[in-house]
Amino acid sequence: MAAGGNEAVTTGAGTEEWKKVPGLLLLEEFISEEEASQLLAQLDSLPWGGRGVEPNPELRRRTQQFGYQFSFRTRTIEKDLGPLPPFLDGVVQRMQSCGIFPEAPPDLLLVNEYDRGQGIMPHVDAPSFGPTVTSLSLCSPCIMTFTKVDSGDATHVILQPRSLLVLRDDARYKYKHGISKEDVEMHNGHTIERGRRVSLTFRTKT
Ligand SMILES: O=C(O)CCC(=O)C(=O)O
Ligand SMILES: [Fe+2]
Image (cartoon, rainbow, N blue to C red; front, side, top):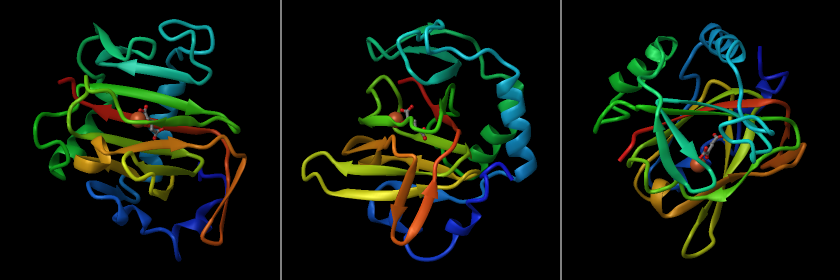
């Protein structure tokens, strides 16, 4: 499977940490291995931006954007890119049928690619996005750290490939989330060997 031999970390202590963050939900195995490989193949057949390539040449990681174009420089939505492409219908419909986007279906997708040694700085998602944010993980597992903005309390959550993370309420607005640049991470006795990770972050435009 795409995880690269890290299946062992799906069980045991430390996999329920997400329950400590109000408004956070982690749905393991949200998509099948076949759906994950199809999604990845589809994304890899499309052009990536970032690392000197428009629309986000300043980014060190590669990205793809669908629905609307978000500027990482101004942290605003800049351009309408049209509806989400049909290859995302299955995932969007499953999220809808699970009641994950009660307001409106997601109309924005940001695909992030993290190579080994790449992460994302702790941040709260921009206010130009709606109250629900989801992130579907592919390939390598990683640890996402949630840090409460007012107290600095940190919670470490293992994101396995094929899991769907849902941020709402406090998790969306009162916690920063970030991913370290470590090649190998230790968490509650688990060793997480980081490799290429691709994530699909679905959001709505406010
Ligand atoms: O890679 C992820 O799962 C999250 C990405 C993220 O936080 C963002 O793009 O705002
Ligand atoms: Fe984010």
